[in-house]
Length: 305
Image (tube, rainbow, N blue to C red; front, top):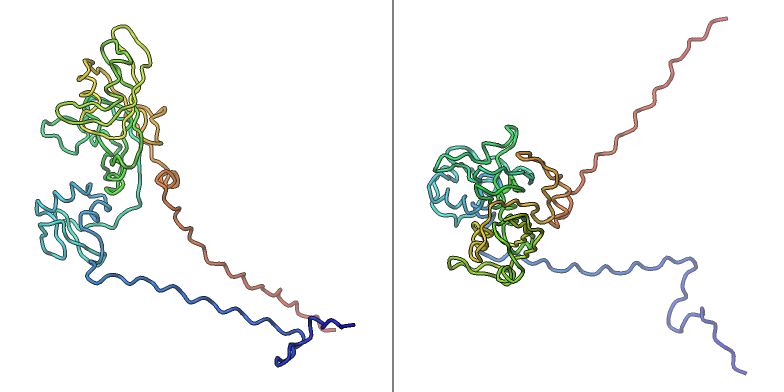
């Protein structure tokens, strides 16, 4: 009868394992080689992007300032936006040193009718910036609402955020309550839903719903994902309807809600970052406090007998 060899018996040629021997640590995998920056890659960011991030203007407007010769870098006037700068460079705009970029901020503003959204109007008409609270920092509008339009307008101190929110690729739907003179039908509105051309300019398909007929006027809800100049008014005119009131009620996730005419409300930073899909800012851990040293109670002198 054959006997089974115990499993813990050492194999021939190998030393017996020591009792209570610690297992050998596994070898750590070699770190993956890091990609080296390509030779010739310019350091820093484009000057227009830096100006926009600092809240001077949008990137496009910053490029105009550069071409106008009012921007200097390290004491020299630049005439082209094709320049990268870093935090080590000294930048001025109109002779004023460029301040460090502030945290990105966004406000909701209920724009009244009768105001234009430019900083300066050639015709001397009042602007939204004349109507903002005095304690507001320098801001710029995300898109525009024309003179006779009202409702929700987003304001920001960050030119890069302005540019991002204005792009159709962001995919944010902008909703409007629109009052038109006439009696629209679904058949009449079909070209708007398919994408209409006006004055040689092609518009993207719109979301259009008839809310109610009110005498000679009708109320519509219109949704856009782009913001071309007077787009809704021009598109309605193309199908024979005249807009006599236009109120923006939402821009992406942000709603006009109960915000009163002329009022401003700031979006909380955490809400803004969540809506933009940005990672939350890392929390700064406070250093641990050292326990206070224990004080010994004072010694009571012994009375001599």
